[in-house]
Amino acid sequence: MTEPTTGAPAVPRTRSCPFLPPDGIAAVREAAPVTRATFTSGHEAWLVTGYEQVRAVLRDPSFSVRVPHALHTQDGVVTEKPGRGSLLWQDAPEHTGDRRMLAKEFTVRRMQALKPNIQRIVDEHLDAIEAQGGPVDLVKTFANPVPSMVISDLFGVPVERRPEFQEIAEAMMRVDQDAAATEAAGMRLGGLLYQLVQERRADPGDDLISALITTEDPDGVIDDMFLMNAAGTLLIAAHDTTACMIGLGTALLLDRPDQLALLREDPSLIGNAVEELLRYLTIGQYGGERVATQDVEIGGVRIGKGEQVVAHILAADFDPAFVDEPERFDITRRPAPHLAFGFGAHQCIGQQLARIELQIVFSSLLRRFPTLRPAKPVEELRFRSDMVFYGVHELPVTW
Image (cartoon, rainbow, N blue to C red):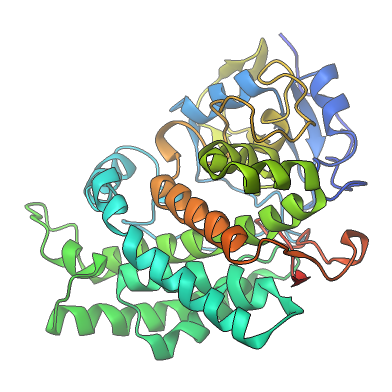
């Protein structure tokens, strides 16, 4: 067994290549896939970087998401977490029951039925970009608004409130601000969602909130707070993650012209391409935080009850034990079971929607603009190292 050490080194965070994991994280994984490290907050905890070891942490019910310290923020403060319906911050048995209720609204069949609306939203934004003419910031004109429109339609968010929702989503995803600023953004989101829930109770539609309101609920779980928590969690997560993948994925494709050419020549590769983009970019750049609720062994290392753990999913998706030549971006690679959507009980409930959306987005973008090219060198782009999910702040393109 390996016991905790003291004065642990800091977790690598600096990237010499913006599309690859932080420098040094591979060496950490090679030396010890489960080791002690010091995080941004100054707290020391276990860092898990190996593919099999990360999977073991994420599927083990001995690890709770209700952590005592926020390891990735500067102040380490854990703000008060929402209750029922907020899947990201729940443990079993509440998480199990709530996820089961919400999963009924995210079936593959229902997500497939959204394709025409997603295509309409994508086409309308591409029409506007084409009419405007290049160069344009693809993040501002496409990557951000498209996922916002898709998820807002799904939840019935009125058009006039969507700009405010986008602003709140960005504020809540920052890791370089204090807990008070994050809490203030959460309060704004709560007000928006409370009003939305009341409107849906008075006048139900065909949106997801209305569907939950009319769901059979013998235990009386689905109250206003449940609906607000569920909608808030899914709205923020679905919007920001997909927006990051569109912007960063486009930047990567433009940076790898050989792979871009392959996709243009053979559009049937889009499914493979999206899976490789998801693995290669793994935008949850800091990993999932957990705390052990009992003594547990991971990869031959004893983790004591009450000790915190970070499952570094990005490092795991680049583990050579998982995929050959992990730093080679190859859209013809046979899709592998990457961890970009997480693993275990907390695996992303909206992953099928994300896959469909990304396939439509990249296929449509490259079809509409076959000569799409960057309007600014990659070295001059601002990357989202200051956010929970990695991406680009802007992506100037032309054609």
